Image (tube, rainbow, N blue to C red; front, side):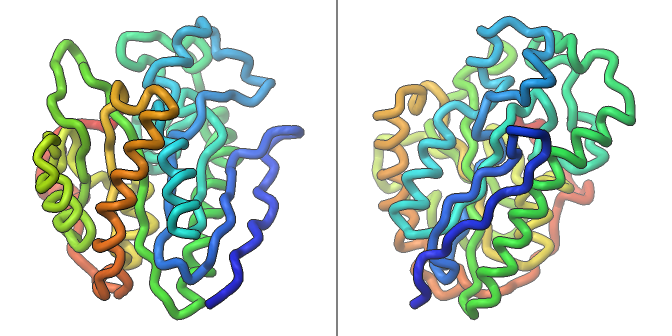
Length: 282
C-alpha cells in the first residue's frame, strides 16, 4: 500500500490565484473524485463580471454543496480529488474546448456583462489560464494512479437546481453515464433500494456530452466512470451536504469493491451525436 500522496503545488494562472485545488490521497485508492463546479470565486482582475453579488449564490456560478460532498468522499476513501477554484461564469471546465456554452453570455435569465461581448482572444486566454490547467492536473493525477497498477474509477460530483425554466425536478439524486454502466447501474439500484429516494437515470441530463470532463478523462481511456448529481435544495446547508456525502459513501463502497470498477474497458460513446441529449447541464 502506498503512503498517502502529497499533492504537488497546482499551476498558477494569475498572480495570487491558482485555478486548481488538489486534495492528496493514496494513488492506489482506486478512485479519483472530481468537482468541476466547486467554487463561485473569480480572479481579482475579473472583478464581478458586472454581476450583483446575489448572482454568485445561484447555480449559475457554481454547484451548491458539491465541493463539500467531494471533500468528504475523498477523505472517507483516502483518495485524491481535483477541484476547480473559479466560477463557471468565467469559463466552464465541464465543456469541450469548442463548445458554444464554454463561456456563457446569458445563464438562466441572467445577462453576464463581462462575457456579453467576449471575443475569441479572451476565450482563448481563459482556456489557457483556467480551463486547461484543470484538464492537465486531472490527466496527470490519473496517469500517476494508473502507474501504481491499480486502475482508478473516476467519479465527478455535481448538483442541480430543484426548478429549471419553471419545471420542478422530482429527482433527489441522479447518475449520469454514457455507455459504461459499471458504476452507474449498481449505484442506481442501491439508491433506489433505500425506498425514500427518486433516483434519476440520465435525468435531468444525459450522461453523453462530447468533450466534457468524464468523456475526456474516463470514457476515452476506458476507465469506469460516473457523474453524480444531487438536488441543490437537499445540500445547500453544509450539514445536509455532509449527510448526503455519507449516504453516497455507503452506497459507493460496494460499487467500488467490484473488480470491474478497476479494469480498462472501452465502450462506444453516444456523445458523438447518435442520440439527442436530454439537455445541457446547468
